[in-house]
Image 1 (cartoon, rainbow, N blue to C red):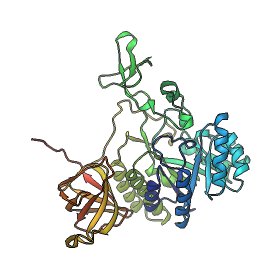
Image 2 (image 1 turned 90 degrees about the vertical axis):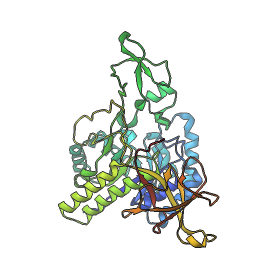
Image 3 (image 1 turned 90 degrees about the horizontal axis):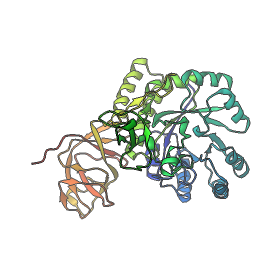
Image 4 (image 1 turned 45 degrees about the horizontal axis):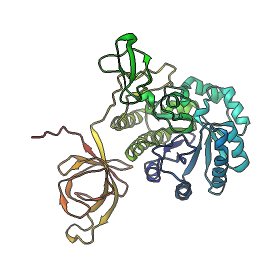
Amino acid sequence: MKKVELLSPAGSFSKMKYAFQYGAGAVYLGVPDFSLRVRINEFSEKDILEAVEYAHNLGKKIYVTLNIYAHNQHLEKVKKHLKFLSKVGVNAVIVSDPGIINLVKKYLPKTDIHLSTQANATNFEAVKFWRDTGVKRIILAREVSLSEIKEIRKKVKDIELEYFIHGAMCMSYSGRCILSKWMNNRSANLGDCTQPCRWEYEEVGSKNKEVRIKEKLNKYEMDIEEDRHGTYFFNSFDMNLIEYIDELIKAGVTSFKIEGRAKSAYYVAVATRAYRKVIDAIAQKKSKGEIRKIILEQKKELDNLTNRGYWTGFLLGDEPPHNFGGKMKKGSWEFVGEVLNNNVGTDFKSVQNKLNILKIHNAVFKNDKIEAITPEKNIPVKIVKILNHKKEEVQEAHGGHEKLYYFEFDKILPKGSLIRRKIVLRTTK
């Protein structure tokens, strides 16, 4: 089998490290101004410089996103950023705008160009066109089906093909949406989508069933139908193609892409690990039974990530349904924290070499049933003791602040482990 790439999202330096630790061969990232992720994006140019050094030391790759549709006012900033990238040594830039492609050729002549899914490449003639302009890889539109991928590969053999396999879908053609700009004056095509397609809408009167954006902007009314639960009439299911990796490899896909730069470190780790295990099992030519077992195990792990319900997108050639109910699905486990370090606490000789420093994201209680997530497996763990930032013993730990906690577990955990707790309904007296 030809070696394929697993490409994970990196919304921060920390998330990038988890992506690599849990099996990604490359990550995509970018500064807010140019990368279609203005919000929940912690990367600066200094971070990119450090990220490239970190990744290349591991033998991994960094792809930088410059996939906005630029207006004249953006071009000088883009040129300045490209000059910076020319000194950094990134492996590729992801671009959608033909004008920016011209600038990349000028300022980064030796750097690979990947065509963003924003450019909506959906047929082999478009792929030929972009190849002839100097593009090395096409990130196919999410709307391209498996049969179409096969035909594109058959017609165009000398180009890399990338395909989204997991994450959010869009109600517009691969992100070319004007709703956010129209409703909230924030352009999706400049990286500031506020996702009005995910908002809840409700009836404001019986006349023509007019509806409005709930708890948002009341000036936008449109005629639609709703039931007693309200309506999410644009809302898409999330994509999950873990059962189709082998078919996509055979179809000629070069790189498998996970969506989610705005998602948590836990999401990045679990999703990356799931697809890594399946890709490796296929590469190792395990039996169909073994591969199927791994797929089912990892499907359960993906189900433990908060999602809008999973679907196969457009892969099988059908029109994906929409999640009109708007309900988010949650698994039976909740992510609670990151293990930042262990073997600490020299001033606590009785528990020396047993304390772990944790950054807490969600509440965890001493008696909770918990697991440690590692790149290899899930490890059942028992909490022996919780100490707060003052090293006072407490019965629970809470997130939402920068203070760290010290946990003693019944076993030593490797740095980079993630902790989750079994969800139980808590009763109050």
